[in-house]
Amino acid sequence: MKLPFNIDFSGKVVVVTGAGGILCGTMAKAFAQAGAKVAALDLNEEAVKKLEEECAEAGMICKGYRTNVLETKELEEVHTRILKELGPCDILINGAGGNNPRATTDNEYQHEASAGQKTFFDLDASGVDFVFKLNFQGTLLPTQVFAKDMVDKKYGCILNISSMNAYIPLTKIPAYSAAKAAVSNFTQWLATHFAGTGIRCNAIAPGFLVSNQNRSLLFQEDGTPTARSNKILNGTPMGRFVEGEELLGGVFFLCDEEAASAITGVVLPIDAGFAAYSGV
Image 1 (tube, one colour):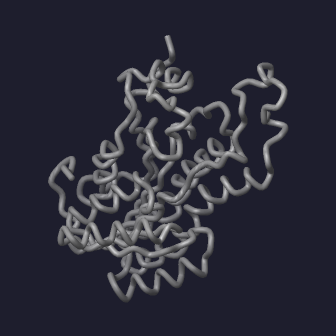
Image 2: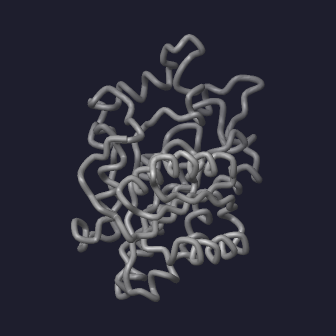
Image 3: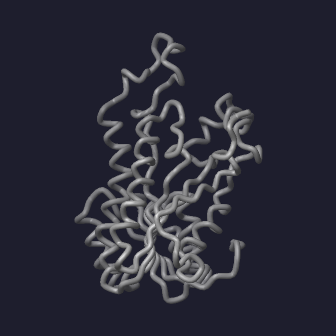
């Protein structure tokens, strides 16, 4: 993979949650390529073990660990293994998250709802709870476990994954939007809380990317854009989706102690201009 700029993370231990997915898997591989020792965490053990094999074949260090980020005991057990196999955590990427159909409405606007559609009033409370826990507690709990290493060393970096939904919520996905807003707020809280310990905490807010989770919402079976996809592109000044590898420049910058030594508590949009456009 072509890295956005020359950077050396040799000697650093980087823990990436959600590394079984395309975006965070790319981040994990990029850090390994930049010299770091990477711990790739995900509930999907097969995905992170495949990532481990790919990195090993390229001479890079990346270990895959099956982990449920909502279970503190599992996180602590994995932490113990990482300490033994790689060392204490220097950089934590909280990438685990996502949406769920149970917390998603079928219609954008209530007055347009038709018979048989799942409206706001039909949202599954357990689905909403799951989405909020996955995104918010899935950021909080790994931080509780791995930031202890950073406090002991008086050095470290935490990078959370927020979303453009945190600024202005999208239609249909109220739980996901609210949860990502909580992640942005939590990022600022952590930055303040850890300010005297040498730990910096920031976040990125990716714009619209095409992933396995949302592909069916953005494209028809014949590959043409859906109506929702057209709305997104019409509201994006660059007129295109963001590529996963385009996140790496912001990720590396915010995680580099020299380049971003005085930057903490920020949420960086990487969105092809979406947040800057008023629609007019």
